[in-house]
Length: 455
Image (cartoon, rainbow, N blue to C red):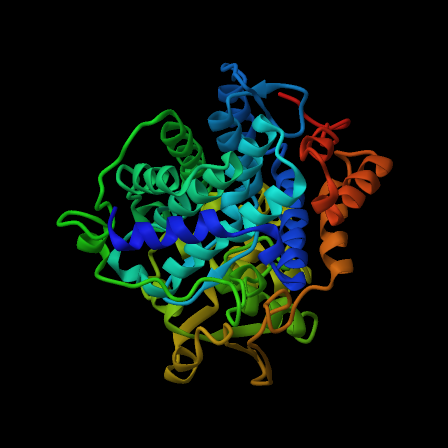
């Protein structure tokens, strides 16, 4: 195997739960709570029903559960269905340096594999913290301008986590990495233009393929020896890079440096929403002449006023549209998972305010990013009065983190109407001490939706 694969596979197989410092263990558990809350929030969505319909057609040996139901499937299809539910709200954690991604997208793969083999909680925590290392590492070195989607590092990281659950040797771990990366170079076009359901399906597909790669490796399937460094390997597509030091002595684990979301929207809208909410109610909506948003390079996405971002027709586009999200915050004083239904998409007040909105890049803010997501919003009234608010480290950012209580409150809100209160209490109790569980299924089996849609 090439040096990049060998270095990662060696690190992955050597890592033990005992190597994780207390902060890495705790932050991993916070992300499990957060991601499983996001799954509940997405349970009743139409794409979630579609994914469950596919998953229930297959029987695994061993099986893995379709979360929220009593039904089982293969580990691969469970990873996909559960991942669709986790990703639907675009509410799970995020990491950004050269490019942006959601490291917790690997959790659906890890939990499906762990469920199938009855892995204990320590193994799940270790595999999850481990998967964050290559995922975030690649985010640090691969420029998004090359046009490769975040799922490229998602499938690699998910395979590493899944292989760790299976306890694969270093040699088989290397094969899993090769079998994950070689056939799964996903395109950034997923996140351009009018966004489709696939925006929330791409990462679950990577999770499914990650599980499959690990299972193939376990059975003896082999992949190309130079999947990363070879003539036509990953380096050929994205440029040469070297792994930055992985988490360990003197190097913080990357799971401690990812960011949780306070609003169900794209990363780049977290600060604009924050700033807009500071301005809520200061100027009557009908009296607003202009909403001027200053941001970093992401503003260039909005140069074309004819793009779908200025006239979102789908939920997927709306939760990635800064003008839509800022207008929603200014009009309603909140942005929630209910902010993207058809009534909101068609709201003439929103459309009118979006038409009075501008967004531009400033050199100052582009120079600051990725040290926060700086944003300034100025509202100009019809009388010429001006109101200004700014944000940089949005609530949930690693430098302005959600407290454990806030993470738990997010989970409880997303569980409301789906789980009975005593279920929620029992689940949270087990998740916060999941490293003590002899079988991760002891908590996963509690996720049976009592009220809601099982279809």
